[in-house]
Length: 393
Image 1 (cartoon, rainbow, N blue to C red):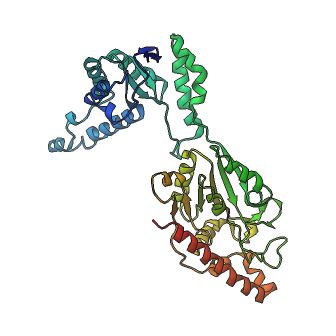
Image 2 (image 1 turned 60 degrees about the vertical axis):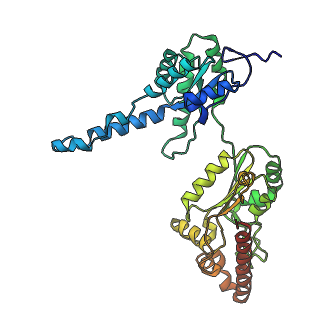
Image 3 (image 1 turned 120 degrees about the horizontal axis):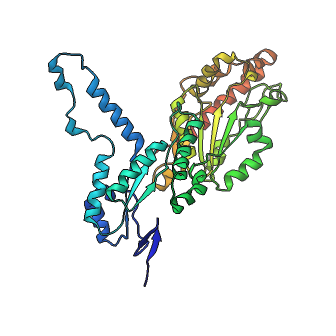
């Protein structure tokens, strides 16, 4: 049976081409792959960012303390311990070409127009049969703007445009698709819990790779502070002047019942790190994701300059447990639910009466305020008990 095919302009005896991995990091490993029937191998990627970092690090060690006495030379690193630039990788390309009879494909992750062409040329000179353009990049540094991230791909397009190879030029039409698009739907709790819940439920049930961010203020903030299904028991809002009689709808737990939806509840005022982790995990998850973010609001009757204090108190009393539900962990045999906040260390009442929306009922109807506060405390205890039990390893 003829299994021959073509890949990257190379004629291969079969379509088995091992990608970058532990075995392609060494010549011996690549030789084992060839012996096992591989028609070509893709070496591990070299990252221009890493080269730049190592060069800067070496420059620091070689220049730091140069004004000191002669004995300070012993503080400097042994030059043999460092290999500047891509020389080690280029050497491995040459060794692989010498040892293997199948095509050797180098892999490059560049971040600049000059970097793509500079290192690609070095690999070509070392004998690489082709070069894989690794454009994988996670925009996780908050100091880097979206425009800067887009510039990385603009540099790649400029490099491709400078080629005379028809096969390379054909990649130009695909270059814009190399950027991973992060799609987000954003809305408040009035939309997510109430009037738009049917649409939201339809989206997360679709299984599509889309992210949803709910800015939960526990009221209809944009229309004057009306009660929503997210409003907690005992809070006063429009259409709930006597305090909301029922418990808060738990959107997160509803979404978790699907089993394939990433769900997180966050509060930046309590943990910015947990918030960042949730956003990164949601964006990386291949499927629908839902992040519910505590969002303080002027309708809460607080000093907005101290909104983060209210957020922290909401978590500390157990009203707003922080968690991440990642279905991917279940595939690894792990509990998909991670409870990120600790057991309540203050009463719900102590948090609630920091805000006018709860406190005002104690003036208009003290007995009802007291009754609802007891029930609200029970709501918190029951919800926390459920999460604590569900998150057990």
